[in-house]
Image (cartoon, rainbow, N blue to C red):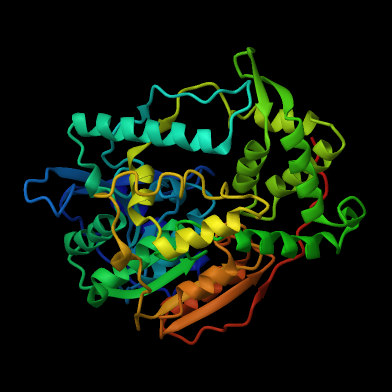
Length: 490
């Protein structure tokens, strides 16, 4: 009785908060392998929910495949005319849908319950779903001597081969960890929930996964909401578009006081890279346990670091700009502080099965790879934005899904796409290319937003709800304030 009373109170509150009509609360139905839980967000907010799992083939292409467990949390619908279950597909690959529901997107998960059950899915091999233990290889990267980007690649390829062999010896079928098998899990969830169709809601790799699903079982997909879209042949981004991103960033810099310090960002970056090429910087990193690690910091280290920090025009991007300014003046104080987070260390190279296999399986076409290699020769970040891809491309030919998988998606499924104008990972130009084959598309630009844009403006949720209600959605841009790239306070 406690749960039933609590559920009624919670759903009544949710209907009031999200302006849902006062309707009779539907009876909660439990499917196989489900149990009622009190879901607690990181903010401390709680709501009644359902925890469930299903068993799926690890590799449907293997008739003797074992079953693996895929976990989810289901937030029951609050409206009497609820539609198809809404399945959240997290990014990465490797992100946890359940973890995302606990974090900043918790209000979105609750708001969308007006339109159907909302499923926070932990994709195969992630979060609470069954997964292999991380593989700690026997390979390390030399930290205190000059090592080329090519040598780093060779070490990573050797470590990845070792890890694939290790997982195979433990009984894992590495060939089941690809976006097609991952997408078919979604269709199994649909069946598990006795639904004719599902609505997909994803971001970044989650959009990649949604596009794969739109190819495989379009008849069972109701609607699609995606942000920061990554096409099926866009696991590796084009270096030339990274350079274009920095030119866009210069426009933002020119509108604030930072212009005095950075009148030409590209020139600053090239100058710092040239200095590091000539004389790498000796950095002493203080570890959390008090010990010290010495790192000979080189250009490829900085390019890799930059690739991790440009996704969003926020705190980390501001720090990166000031790292470059510091290095240009032979000041490594800010860099040393950032490196204490442990991005470069003397630990063995370690991999997780799901994200490693997923990226290699999605791969890259030969034509695009040639384009990437050519552009990387002169690009500001070379080929480091996507590390460790394409460096691990075709590590195992059997794992690669092939060019048929990577072809453009053609679909009339109603699709809503949000793109950030300052997305430093899935660039707006690439996203426009990704959705060319979608004939029923609503595409909204969020000006000055980056890669993680769902909570960038309340208007994003307004447009999502309008779309799910089956109404016409305004395609006018959503305008955010100009990002401030001043030196963050320390």
